[in-house]
Image 1 (cartoon, rainbow, N blue to C red):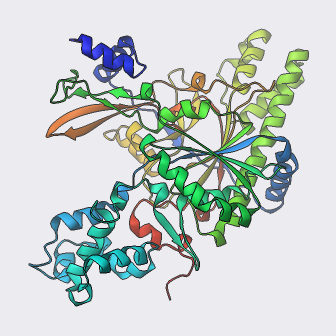
Image 2 (spheres, rainbow, N blue to C red):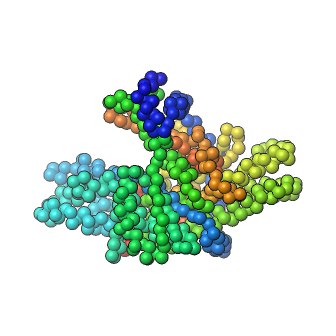
Image 3 (cartoon, rainbow, N blue to C red):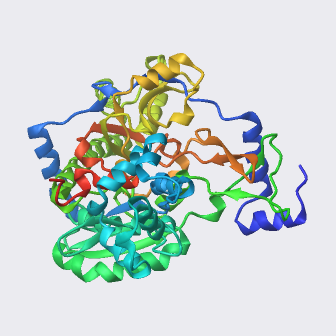
Length: 521
């Protein structure tokens, strides 16, 4: 492998080592093994469902304890809005308004997304903002054809000559239109957090991971809305930010696993994916950390229901932690009796989803206790799961590890062998979907913070293929934040209603009821 002095300087400038780069290249050569799905996690087989009285108990448990806990909301928010506008960019590239009508274009291109965008145009929160700019630049706008009007509207909305929304971070786009204001998803995360992530002093801590080029814009947005949001929620918001660390970037290689070089001869590094954020998560000081993506918010009339389910998940976390901490503290004081060991085994299997080795009963007492302690002394995550309605992305599965034991995991589609019919059948049988709705306990029974990097499965990354300047390159994504990066956590999966899952993956998602203050008449 021909690594030059300049390469070494670049590698070191990112906080990486040559050894780490060589290890990444070996990963490309050896490939990353696919997971071995045993079955989909379903209700009563890895997924819990709470009803009525028990939900109330968990809510009360959280509310009675939350004032003594340090909580923080963690929001991955570095994503750009470009993919959200994919169909609109395609329209700008392909539609020639001076050669055909809009109706003709949408028919032969089967451009249903454009049709829906046009139908709902005045319902979008940014409509008046864009129109104001459009009419300034095009005084004769009203006299133009429908196709040219739509083209100009989209161009002014997305391109640099206009509002440049195509280059915005998702968190700062206009998301919801109220009678007296227009809010971003950043703002809605603050309103939502006030409902469950607030201490006795009225403080609410929220941490956003963003691109460093957008730091000033996020800070400006917070200053713009701070007084209004704090007054309406009676909350003091403590906002912090971090960036994906350069040492989590990964090397790109050619299709033959050789170092890929740019036109000027430099090595090409790529961001390591959201799995890199385990380092940012690990830097936080808190007892409980909520995790939710930047695009998954609702208008305020639905936020009370969303907050209610957050308290239920947090209450379950506290309930599980209480028992784990009690058992581990008791074991430290005195070796458990046979009867106590039997109860602990039952707790592990029924409450913590731990599958014991087949020969566990043949272990010596010393190794039984060691196994039980190691199985329980881990970070804990309680994850909301929604019924699968065909959304792309990860889901909950029972996975067979190399040692033959079954573990409960959140698995993404690229981790599954698409050529293995049995594995694909298991994938299709999934009843639930991961909406990224996590409540995490990151301290041990002695109050010490876990080093979260010790619980990452390094073999759970992804190798993806990209095109750059007409060449195929291979890129390495680190184990995903809620996938391999939390592979060795205790995982509790709980069904939550679809009303708690309202991401904006395309611009037309903003027309859904969860994002509309007034619904279509």
